[in-house]
Length: 106
Image 1: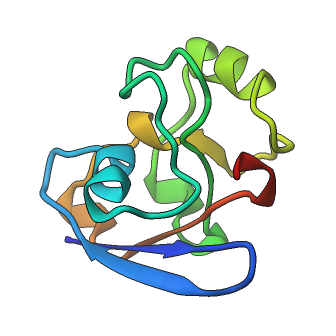
Image 2: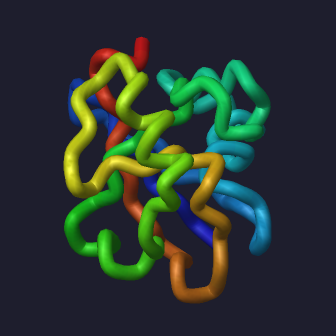
């Protein structure tokens, strides 16, 4: 499964992930800048905030109320495409997923 992480400067990093892993864990394993993941994926910090690319927004599911609460605390602005990358799991349907790393998460 491939995930493309786009940095605020437009640079891209394509990472090979494992089905079932989170988009956050995939980024951490590959050293993707801007995905800090301080809480290790327990949805307690919002340092794995990403913007799901518009082409993929309908495929990543909806945010839970708890995820919305955490995103309210994120450094970067929450938009309708904001997700905590720890809450998005890789599936066959998400092969090729593209997410954008917010500038304020650095």
